[in-house]
Image 1 (tube, one colour):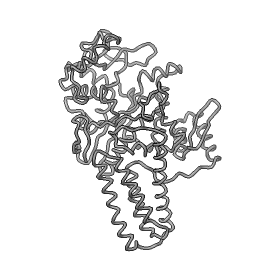
Image 2: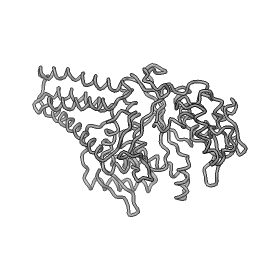
Image 3: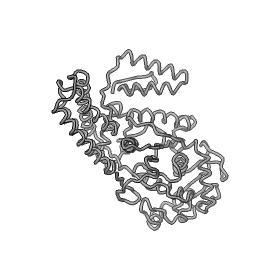
Image 4: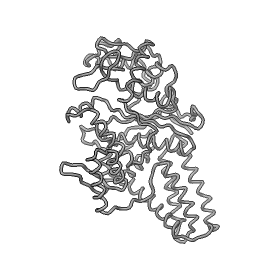
Length: 471
């Protein structure tokens, strides 16, 4: 199995730190709003990577964080007149709902930044003690970039390039005059009025963004991990800074493999709120089964740019229907087909199934090329449609079904068509959810909402009450 390592810019043979085990950290979202489809791509991509490792027999320790303290969260909280934790907890719940709709497997651990402050303070102090960080006069703690001779190794930037890029900015940004070097970055910053804060040896304040992931990765996976992953927008400065502070604090390599998915565009243009082309996963779920979004995301190799459009989604929808139609036919024959052993022709066809599995595995072994893996699945769909007939044996239909289920399972594609619920059943579940919310049993309320979403029922909480519609 080969992985393109951003660190070396080459495909490398995967060799785990421990035989049969994979430690994997994926940077999660900042929870100030519903997740957007740009967030969805790494979620789907690296969930599929995890699934393939497990398919190959590895035990995967998969950690993905929630950044639950941030300027955007604080801004949203101030606008609503609530504590920032109200915003973050709300959108963590909504994020988990959307992730379930996309069939993202639950992480081994979803740490929250606010629950790991003590570890962050300890790592910052270690960096100060080792001479890699310093305290400014207002209590801000900065990482001393020039203390790390390897800084820039992930993004392949050198210090001269970085210094020229910072020259103009340093004259305009508050606090830059406290830095020894314009490239130094914040590890801890003082509180501002109306912001959450924690007590530290340097000042009352909160951590910088980059230190969060270094601490959470170390706590839940170890000082050196197999894979660190995220979107390509995180290569610099986030992941570069993670490497610097982690390796300077711990004295060992941070991650052996760095994986980054390419950008997602909307109708050929970068997604942006200012351009009016910003799309949340929740909005997409109002028009499509989120399995359609998942199949769309996997239609390209993860390092290739991907363009989201209505035409592409309609194509993915039709493709998902083809898979499900083939699966329905297999299930029907498994129930109603001929009893007894496979015929001689069926036995020969069953022997050919290994070729489709081999094509699928070859694609996935080559840096998780889901585009080619999906193609292999559709070759199998065509084969199934031509060989699984009403008079086929149950045994043959089951053999084809098992192979297709296994490969679709790696991709996280659910082959079973959802059955429509009666309106009365939907209304009853909505009432049960409302009762749970009144009782402040938010876990049960979320469970009911997730169950409805899985059945294709979209809920919208409005001032006039709960509205629903079918996806």
